Amino acid sequence: MHDIAERLRRIEERLDALERSRGPSKVAGAPAAAADVSNSFDFDLSLIGRTLIVFGGAYLLRAITEAGLVPASAGVVLGLAYALSWSILALRPTTSRLSAAHHGVASMLTALPLIFEATRRFEVFEGWSSAIALGVVSLVVLSMARRRELPGIAWTFTLLSLPLVAVLMAVTSAVVPFLIYFTILGIAGSIQWIVAIAVNLALVLVAAFPGQSPIAAIVISCLVFAAYVATFAWRTLVRERDALPFEMTQTFALVFFAIGGAIWIAASRSTLELPLAVLLLLLGGASYAVSFTFIPTHFSTPTNFVFFSSLALLLIIAGGSLLSSSIFWTGLALATAWLASHFRKASLGLHSAVYIFAGLAGAGALELGWRSLFMRVEKGWMSPSEGAVLLFVACAVAAAMRPIERKGTYELWSAAKMMILAELGWIAASLSMSALGFMFLNSAQPDAAVVSVARTAMFATLTVVAAWSSRFATFAPARNLSDALMAILVAKLLWEDFRLGRPVTLFVSLAIVGLALIVTSRLRRKAATPLPVARFA
Image 1 (tube, helix red, strand yellow):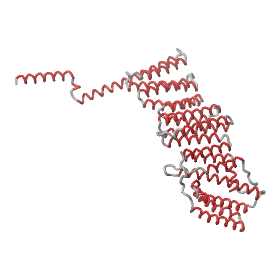
Image 2 (cartoon, helix red, strand yellow):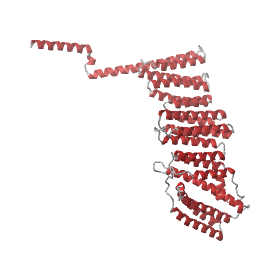
Image 3 (tube, helix red, strand yellow):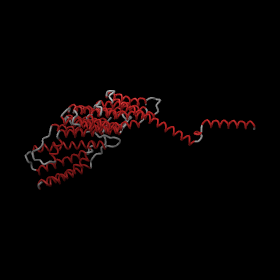
Image 4 (cartoon, helix red, strand yellow):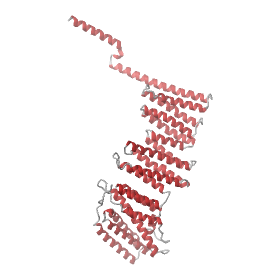
């Protein structure tokens, strides 16, 4: 018992000594927590104080420059080097993330106002030099923020640089240098949506700025578009993923702002129209090539193919609008119709229909059909162009595109085929009515009642032919087309024939319409289900 009591006494002495060595602040939990908060608060104050000293050094350099002790240009260079040195110091592994964040704040709040004053007050920088200086500062600060994992610094710097660039544009009357800066920042930066909006607004300024060289504006607009799209395509291919919503949205926005602006400048100022058309066609061909690389791959959904092929469609239409060649549109329509059947891509069938429509518009076939089928004839009949006849052949060949099954449905193929058949009917009716006018109704003011009967007969023929062709699987969507033609036929009878006709012509028109409705209703009962005749690899 004596030994046990001695050991307990020694243990108590040791505990007392240990508690005395820790001090009163470490005994209870609450005082210890208060001490920790106090230390953290003191540490934050020290960082804030250090940042204030950094700002003081910047003002000292400004005072030296204003006093004329160093040239203004040298003072600006020293100030920028001083500002960037703090972000460089933040890259040291011994620097904590909190300390690095304070370094980044010191750098941006020192460098950005300095660039403004160097441009506005000291007049050391002009448009290009201020954009380059801002680019260097952005590279250092954003690289530090990415390496030290400080997204807040990247967001803050980007949001501060946007209004600064707007002010610098107004001060220097230069847009192109800052558009290039925005483009690089948007491609390499992390805040893509906000910078993309700034890029699009800058493109509008480039197109509308009165003092801007049209050639430079066209070139820079195309370069911005190519840089963005090439980056998106590279990321999609290398990372083996689908295009992101931002990439698709910004791409189509650039088609409108960059490509649309370039076309507007070229057309309004009659400059670089042919080179721009060739460039757009090359970009469209490259987009088609990228889209076809996704067909055999296992990682990609149809999203990538539809995205890049749709981009190619828009670019080729934009470039082709500057050429206005019926042969060009005919070749595109036939090529995409063949590719649609070969690769079983119904979306390419829609491309064929769009190219045919663009060719009809360029060849004057839309105006020809409107005047021949609907307008009152007062100055003779409009003669068709050679391009209209060529596009009629393209329509007939593209209409023979075989059914395309995709996951058990035919909706996209049916829409493409119905568009092509509608275009075929339009151009066929236009050419036929124009030929009838020249052969039988060619006078200064032909009889309106007789013309209305001829038009009624033309629409009735189209209605019957559409219903008859729907019996074949290849032309099955013509059944829906026959429904639309029947409605047009009845509306035309009520609007034109009864308004302009005489009893004799009304008798003929009513007989034609009645017979067409009877025949069409019987033919529609035999309409085919659009099943594929053969499968294509």
